[in-house]
Image 1 (cartoon, one colour):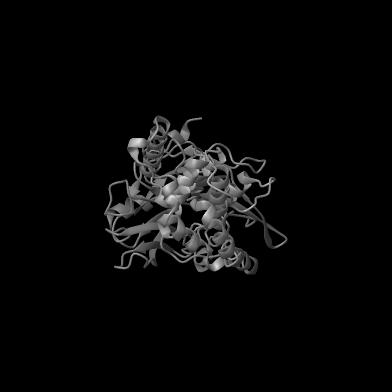
Image 2: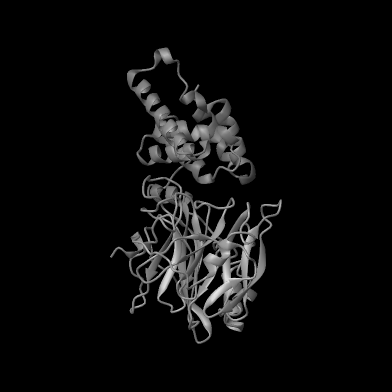
Length: 425
């Protein structure tokens, strides 16, 4: 009996009901279609054994790369389909349907399965247009669709904090520009934004999907990129990506120097010492940024170094879980001159603790500062805690008597600068 010829009339009837088609189709495959591939190993030809070996190797390779079974069956089915290796395409599409009894499988996979059956000589299937663009069909399944509501909902937010859309950001900025004095009132913990001193440009991080460097059918990867928005006639417009590193690397947590000439940020681009390092790039007269420079081993570690914030022109605050600290992410400070970088100093207790502290801002005119902390039992309970300090003769003296903070906050301290990657030209 030719199963495909017998079942096709039923397929055509069931296709009229889209709600049940995939489940029905998968059920019939589960009971019968697998016989197309399943053969007695003793009767297998040499070429069939070689093909089975290749299938197993391909599966193991993708599995070791971390792909799920569903992704593997989809990718290998599509790859063989476009290579016109229809028997092997049927093998992987069959496994795809059996995996979930057809639930959640796109109609496009059913269509390619039917076409592969027809081309491999297993019987007649539904008529197909000779002009069908199968490459476009496959590529459309890998396209990441985003609704209008989701379009701006994936900006990089400080860990575990609530999200804020760019529409709200634009509306807020139009009502009242964020300055160094009122930045705290803008709920900075919800969306990290760097505003230039003249208030005409804003830098923020957005999550985007990019195609991996390798793998024709590999899923798009989520990375973070820094974008720039310009204020024109009181309105934020002209949003564009800032080219700071390779396409497949992330760049996030932008911070602008007080003179507007340097952009500090965190990135996992090639050349980092750890997972994420802090970099700086100079803003050229033409509005473009120069080559990003790694701040070197006095700042960066073999772990994560994140959330840079430049205060007073040369004092860089950042979070790290790689330097010696109290545990988790601690806040550090380092002096960064034009071509030199000093030693990183832990701000000590009570600023830091065994939990995470990951962002600090100093308000120069009112003697206060804010630090974002996560010290509760709930990992999502991020809080913004205020602290005060006294300021005299251009040096900060925190009210707490912790020696670590006194050393770090003193901008007139004698620091023995050393060469770092930052100063390499």
